[in-house]
Image (cartoon, rainbow, N blue to C red):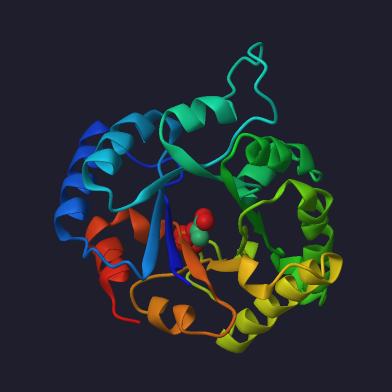
Length: 248
Ligand code: PEP
């Protein structure tokens, strides 16, 4: 199974950055069919990114979030239909920075809208520091996973989850490698218990939180890790290209 390497640019970038980033990436990225590279730029830069995507065929595109329906009277929102048109195959759903701003616990309806519009959601879950310190990680994840389980009938392809401990995002800290493996296994088991016909290979769990050139190889080679979601280190195109080109 191809490992996923995803770049979350968050609110970073301008036109020059995007141009230079993709010129470098498409020139230097090895055409390695063992990995599936997905870039998540801001909405504003999707169009330019799509130009390079179509020209190079080396990576896929995704959006960082999406509205829960396609009705047009939604000032300031972006629909799944619009994202499809601009070349997105993926959407992040429930990134912790998004959750922080939107205060929505039940985001089942966003997942459903992404799925029914034939895009693949990458559903982000993770405990915050106080959940971790009070040993509540598994129960927090179980509640967040309920949004996937509610929508299980809408999935036809793979289920992709990004386990991103909130305390690891942008902090330079990561969980112990055996903890990452254990939590990924816990997530896969929880979902497959709800749908026994689902095979483990149909459930992909990416790890996100302070991934960089130094720790990617170890994380990607860990049991139950199907890929990485990279924020800060994906902004540096040389570092990101090196991460993608690393032999596993
Ligand atoms: C993220 O925001 O998805 C993320 C993983 O950020 P960072 O790599 O900077 O920790």
